[in-house]
Amino acid sequence: MTSPTGSEFNAPTRATKDEGAPFTHGAFSQFFKKDRAAYEVLRGYRSVNPSNPVHLVSDGGDDMSDLAEIFHCDFVHERLRTHRWASQYVWLQRVNRACLTTFAEVDWILVLESDVECFRSPVHLPRYPLSGGPTGCPWTPALQKFFAQKWGPRFREGGLGSRFRGCGGSIFNRRAFVESFANTDYHAFEQGCLLDYRIAFAEDAALTYVLHADGHDSGPWEELARSDDPGKHRCAFAHADKRYYNKPYPLHPNVVVASSGVENCV
Image 1 (cartoon, rainbow, N blue to C red):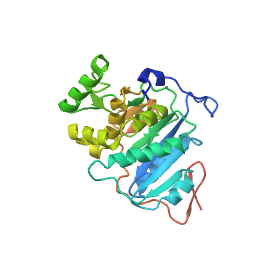
Image 2: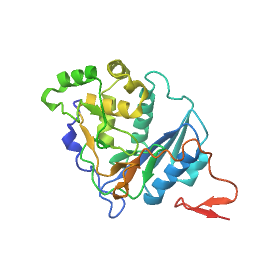
Image 3: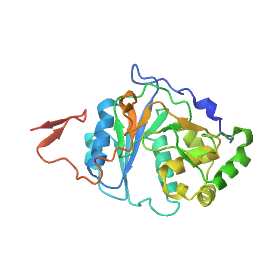
Image 4: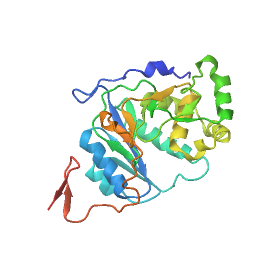
């Protein structure tokens, strides 16, 4: 089956459920440790997106079922940790399963990593099937050459075949991903890893590779800023907030968290 071109994903494929929202989206989160960073990002997202679906995965680590209950997430406790060569294919499988279950009724999926700040619900429709930070990282010359030969005039400096995006706070089209993943078996994925080793270890590189390999473009999203950008509050999300890394899980028996994710001391 031939996959649609990226231009077919510049508009939502379904009507939104939430009145006033410009498009439907959910959030995918995977963590190893149940620490304060995991808690804060889920609390931040829920505070501005109270009804959007969230798929939470423990990556062979802590039991996060209480986090899932507090913040109304679908939770899967995986036993395998994705930190070995080419194991990001396992991460992609997890994303694909979430696309077919938790996210079956949404158009776009946010990559909600533990260093994402959330300020409001997004209002700007993503322009690309994978929309993220303003610059991204260049693919290796070997992989750029591969994509240039594969896509010819569709190869785009800053986009298709040129550089990868997909960091925390990025957003991708659900249908584009599902069809691209179906067209990328493990052998094709491993070939990409041999051309750029970051695909084997980095979620953002793995996500972009699968979409680029199927001909879907990527580019910036005006709803995502860096956390060190003084104007970040103009956006819905910011990436690279490390304040809560390696800090302990904050809840104790005298704290009750309401369904909105707001703490109430008792």
